[in-house]
Amino acid sequence: MADQEDKASKVAHLEYLKAEGEKAYDRMYDSRYPTGEYADTKDWFRAAIQYAEENGMTEEVETLEKRLEHVKAVFRSQFT
Image (cartoon, rainbow, N blue to C red):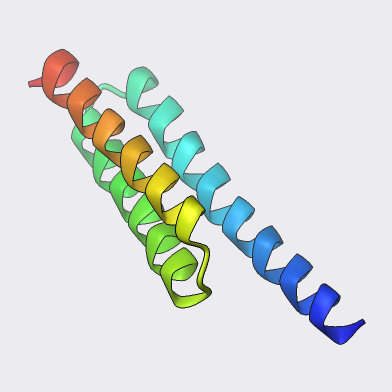
């Protein structure tokens, strides 16, 4: 039972990190200075990737790395 709670806690924390990354990404479009929001977005996604790596969530790492690359591509094409 403790293992299930621990896993649920880890998944919940990862979801939090991802959600914060997505919020920062959304703010990037509403900001007059999107570079700051872009930096925040990258920080949140990097934190999520690191957390997923540390907890053996291989599929999540791959998904998050792809999402981060997409975010970078969008920023470069729309804001630079």
